[in-house]
Length: 500
Image 1 (cartoon, rainbow, N blue to C red):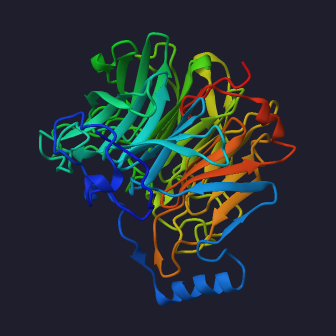
Image 2 (image 1 turned 60 degrees about the vertical axis):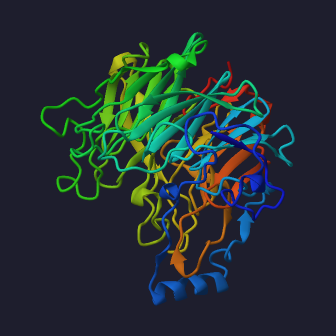
């Protein structure tokens, strides 16, 4: 691991020379004296579009139908306070976590810590180089957790890409001590089957449990064998994080044969992902409840025993959902919003051709009690603004905005920007605010936009894949009561009881 100072000149890149970024700490794991961002975790190049599509995009900009290239537009109740560009870590920005006056920003090359005590002027506290996509991030007390879901040469922060077909390759969870925010220390690594695409905290007083979501096994991968129809559960003792270890692998989709019991996907269900694990899980610790977005399935399960989660209900949508991506409960735990990441986040799906029901959110009511609770579909929500065919756009990561008696959330939509919307009436969701930038390119489909957008202590924070860290201020009578709610820590996939 290398800790990096904020570069005085933003255009400077790491790897040119150690002095260009300034080392604040020595390498803490075995490896080369100087690590550099790994090209194996770089985003893919843009995809060319037809001349007619390019002409249509340019015409839409000229006619004012969509914003101009990189132009910022927003509703009247949103104010864009600041953008902090990427600095020493040039990779893809990913998820966010919060603790006190700090925001923790994941990046495919590592993570960055911001002091957000003044939301109008966040300050970089530390930048840690530790390549390994997608570096999904969360915090609990003095511990920070980082997911690695790309096959690496070893578990160190100096690792390089290595084929998953090699037994020596490593993927899994990394644990850091962040008691000193200016000097995070790498303290543990736990290898997990098929790596860790995302993870979810189930915190207890003495231990932190991690539900590790990963998928896409292959018979040629020694450490990622099919059917892989469950999740890894890691137990991390708070006072001895170096003893972190996998304690169970609960099967969520039991079934006979090599394919397990999840959604079979295509060709049985054309256009639907085969379920070979989960993409993301959201837990409500106060309610002992969790929702899993698991590729071809959405599930509701009990976490009364955190080491042995129990599935309560399971639903599929083989008409409009391609890939169950993430989940968000409302405060009363009688609704859950599932997202569909149609096109894997790299496609233009917010257009008339795709329509309003695909690449959208699915709103489900939770009816019944105890282990007899059921998920009942009510409606879809998708941003009401068409995007250019050169913009990747689909439902992605968001969080509740805590307003008593209302169900409101803020959500990222990649190049569709940030949407604030209400689903108090499950059957009639509606947008109440938005923020977005115009297309990154009018000539090719380039991946970018808001990866995550979360509400924390009165402000919206968004991690833009290419543009950096954005802070937004929402001023609206429907959401203003949320400004009174203050949290000491927020990992969105570990939903708090906002009003306890």
